Length: 395
Ligand code: SF4
Figure 1 (cartoon, protein in one colour):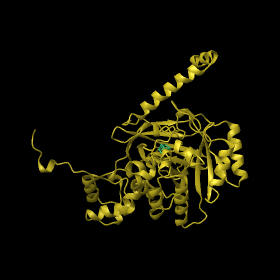
Figure 2 (spheres, rainbow, N blue to C red):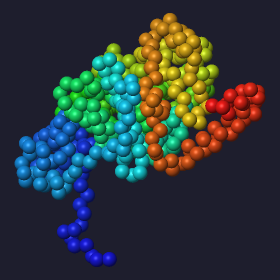
Figure 3 (tube, rainbow, N blue to C red):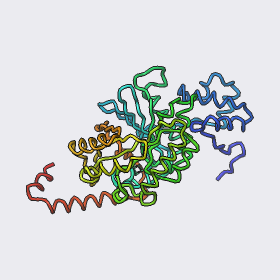
Figure 4 (cartoon, rainbow, N blue to C red):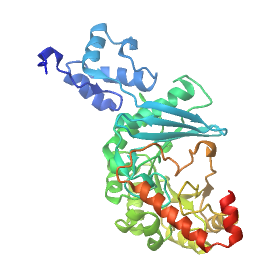
């Protein structure tokens, strides 16, 4: 093999896309340039959507040439964009290591919420979650996280001034548990809120966690964003089954940590959003609603009820409308603000819990779940009457 000359040694270029304002300032300083160049490049990338140094006209030609040598602005690659009839948009994004993630845009009135992924797959294995069934692949970099916002803004309005299809809110609620990718998620959320970046207010950037308590304890010290807790059960016994991380950090510990987070915020009127996915006959009974009302009595919160959205091989079923109405009524009568998330983007499998993507399943977890589901189906068929079996076979 021929020896490589010194001049041919590949220099690893710094990807500027995921760097915060401070990190960009540090970068320019480290290459003997003024710190304010960082702010200029930040605005080009995240306010104007420009990712080619040659188009950054307020940088001198020599500086642009230098940047070509030492830096790059590398976006994740969009493999596919799907548009649902109700305006929901999904991007399947290739992250360069064979793994794919998804970002989903959900328009509602004058709001447009982008659901952003933080990891490829997820290790927490919540029993009702499509992503959890894929196992964990790896953390996303800050560039790959903020890259999802860039891709959505670019596709929706091309970084134009006023468009009806805009990203007004972001939620770290896509694939992965954001608190298990703490530094990169914090860096990306900072860019979402930076006035020279996407300029979203802290009320419009939400982190949703299943309850990694030690990291939640840390979060309020480094950033001020809205918080959502994926609770899904009113007691530890049930939550241990649905959200296994609860065995390590039970509900009382989680709610104490969430309340501490609120106490650190400057705005004392802030509330936590409690996410509660309703599954038929699992956690949708009136006693569950009553228990939930009592559990949350000391936590400033609003409750978001999410009818479960079935996906292939799941054992759970969607809550009935009657149960949903009854559940909501109990909470409203107890004095809570309750919203119900309508199912969106069904025709492109974009609704929450369906962020499956073409992920490398290193743990072969999805295979095990499929086998388990097949044997459950087998068992069910054996238990059914002949007439019911005929109906199943005919479907
Ligand atoms: S619900 Fe969230 S934390 Fe739980 S497995 Fe799915 S992605 Fe992970």
